[in-house]
Amino acid sequence: MSLSEKSRENYLRVTHVLYPFSGLQNIDADVLAHAAERGTKVHKICEGIMAGIGEIGVDDETWGYVESFKKWWEKGVDIVKMEERFWDDELRLTGQVDLIINTPDGLAIVDLKTSSRPSKTWEAQGSAYAYLAKKSGYDIKKIYFLHLNKHGKEPKLIEYPVDDSFFLAVYRTYIHFFHKEK
Image (cartoon, rainbow, N blue to C red):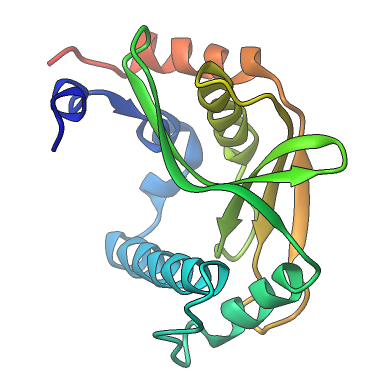
C-alpha cells in the first residue's frame, strides 16, 4: 500500500454512502453476500474478456451474465480506463469506476450490474463516479449502467444524467444523518 493509499484508507466509499438509501439492509445477509460474490466473479470474467485473456472462470451461475456482456462488448468499445479508483481529498471520498470509454459524445462512465432489477441508487452512484472522475481530469459527458441479463439476453444500457449536484446532495444528507466520525 502506497503512502497516499495509506493516508486515504479511512475515506468513505461511494457504495457505503449510498447504502442507507439502497434498501439493501432489508435483504437477507446471506442472499446479499452471494449476490455480491456472483457480481465480483462476473466482473472479473468481463475484465478478462476486455483484456483479451478470454472467458476464464465461467460457470453455470455466471454464464448468462457473461453472454449478455459479450453482446455489448462485440459491438465495439473503446476503453480509456478499466477498474480505476478515484479519490476526493476534500470530501475524503473514494469510488472505483468499472470503465471509462470513448463514445461519439465524449467520455462515458460504464458500470456493470448483475442485479435482478435496477436500483434506485444507480443514478446517484453514476453521478458520484462522474464527479470523482472529473476531479481527476476526465471530461465525463455520459453515465451508463450496463444491466446484464442472467439468461444471456441483450443487456440493458441505462443512461443517467451527468449531475454532480445530485450525488453531492446525497453525500451531504448521508454525512448529516448517518456518518459518525471515527
